[in-house]
Amino acid sequence: METPVDGGTVMIDDVTFTVPLAPFGRLGAPVARWRLERLVDYHAEALKELAEGGDWRQFLDG
Image 1 (cartoon, helix red, strand yellow):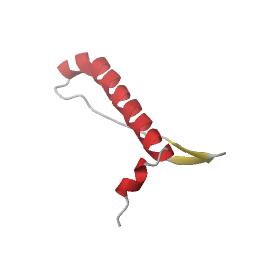
Image 2: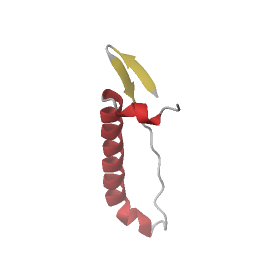
Image 3: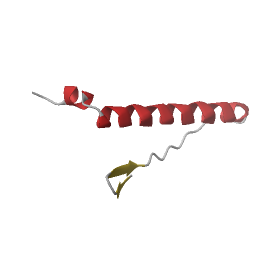
């Protein structure tokens, strides 16, 4: 989801995941959640740096 804000856009990721091997997998759910949150945070920061810098041009055709 994207929300326009003054000077830019806020992007919101809604992630749903299921831990395999229930009910035993639930024991690892807190670790999986922590790792997933770190992954999403890293992805958001990388996209922000790419969008705010000039490197995004390398992904355009031609």
